[in-house]
Image (tube, rainbow, N blue to C red; front, side):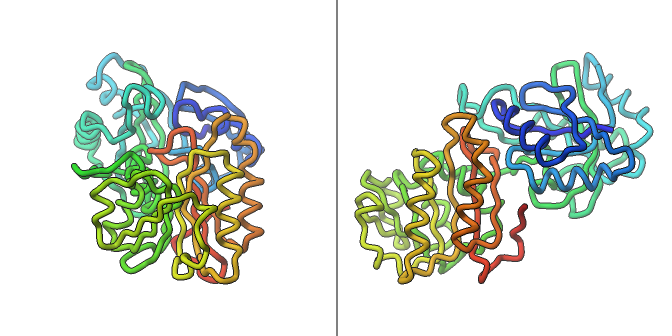
Length: 353
């Protein structure tokens, strides 16, 4: 039995390292950039339950499922015909189809949006084997078809659990507004959906490193009151929004009394992870503030920094955060997103290891 996983191209090494460290019954097997398989050595275990655990705990896995085998076919029609002969798909509810990433996120303008051609192929498979397609319901069993190369497809299945696992390839279908201020909108629109943090209408947030305003824009559209801190200029569309206040300066120069009504802090600073954590720790630990949760990115400038992720989590636990989630989201580049909330105000949608 094998597990199949996908990740961003370039994140194979930390994904392999974390899975082999946290799940001793796994052994590395077949792989391609952005696609890895692991042999399950425990013959008596429940592979679906193992896949659920890996999906929940892994920082770098985008999709996790149980392998059913591979198909070599020189055309989509031939692939579908071979798929009909698989003997472990009759008890599944739905089909998902997606194509492995062809290059790293951001390279040549690549963004990991769901492809329309993949949706067409997904519908073709669904019609051929009498399954539904599209977003799954919680608990449904999904047939997974991943196109690895032009003539190679990997077949697996998984159980729809968290929100991300209900979409093909673990990719959120996000509609980009025509007035998007910056790419940070993509990252934090996805991050807010993924995190489950109760950031909504009337919530007060501070956006540390807010220029030019993409992350603030994602918050403002939800009715959030945003205090943006950055020495650089903000986009005029954000500046004129009645829910936005700009403090032009560096976070270390701002009076902390201005943050007394802030309940959540977000940050996307192009600095080393420990510097970001230092800034957030100073903000959270002040007695005159009432920051209850954080949503921020940690830059992995060198891939070796991924080895320090457990240390970063420990720092956050020491600040009183009862639940901590870390994930390399689809619109992250060489970084991960972190969501956490104080133990006294946990959001029931949050879960983590």
